Length: 135
Image (cartoon, rainbow, N blue to C red; front, side, top):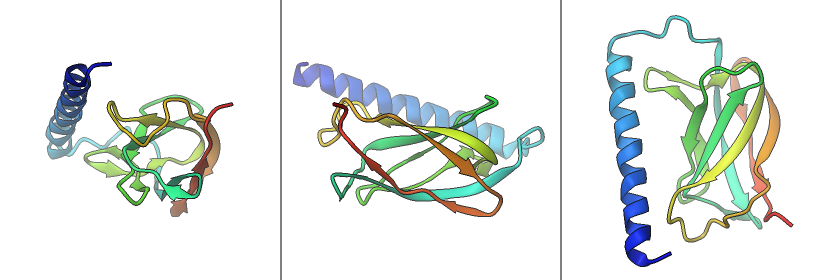
């Protein structure tokens, strides 16, 4: 992929994130959180080979479906899950966790062991993930 194409991909990703944040902000300002499932705080750290892994989105989806909750790992690999701009956390109960590298992320291997199953409980949840390159 050319450098120009990589820049276009990164700009498109930044635009999509900004657009999603703007839409979420409008929804959040309307005070509409009714209908959300019970949520619990979720934080943690993502590593690869024992080293912090940033530039990766950590996504939680409840087994029964519904909205996906997500957070972006920072340079230290730390993330916090948001359900929407108006609500933080993930749906309580069994969740499938997936990891999506941001377009153009240099340190993130394209192929990772991509899913995990976790049980989100009431209160604060801390899930640290050690990712491995796919065989």
